Length: 271
Image 1 (cartoon, helix red, strand yellow):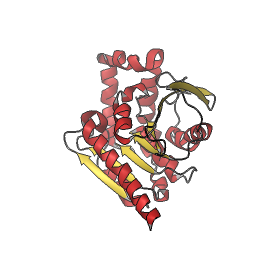
Image 2 (cartoon, helix red, strand yellow; image 1 turned 90 degrees about the vertical axis):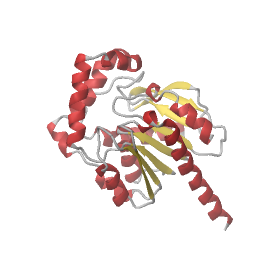
Image 3 (cartoon, one colour; image 1 turned 45 degrees about the vertical axis):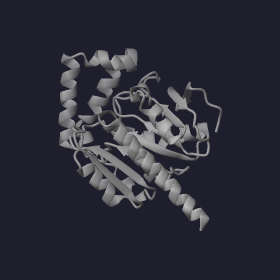
Image 4 (spheres, one colour; image 1 turned 45 degrees about the horizontal axis):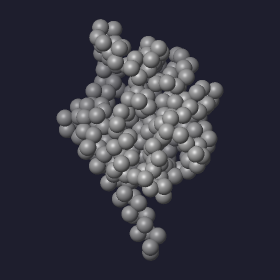
């Protein structure tokens, strides 16, 4: 792996992307790669990555996709397959440029979908496991309805001001680029279930019981269609961001998931 600074930019597919790197306390452990939600960015994870770095001793790599945070602009309007493009082209290029070979993918919402596309495509290097927070594998009316409510909030509240703290001068493009594709008529048919059967690595799915952007049909589709072991955690009193609503509980679930896999691997090596 190349020598990384704590904050850096890397050109990927012609766009400068913002990265943050937290070095591992234990260099023998895999890296956790954070993939943000549809309105997220590197900064919007706040101190959750730092806390997870401390509890797991893993290195943490966080980046903002094109059009988010301090990264360069995205090409708008987004195509229906924009998450496919991220999982099939952008993420593999990042892994290649940074020479990362041992890693877990930790994705939230759109980021979880991107992780599923990457893992199910058979791309190499192979992830050690997937940690999925509120993933989407197909569109739902609940999701579209909530996005339309978000648009009303963007027009009538201080939501643009809050998002501008992270996305700066391209906040309007960030918000409407996300909104417009999810409510586009062609996006009703968006579906990535075709990738699930190709996932034979361990998967942890964490979803809020009150998730306003997806029902439990999402996590059940993953559980029943992936080829490898899958653990589901449904959290009560939790909406679309489990890492915000229950940070300590989510950290504990991730810690247990990672180290149970490492313990199992160590036992197999000793046989």
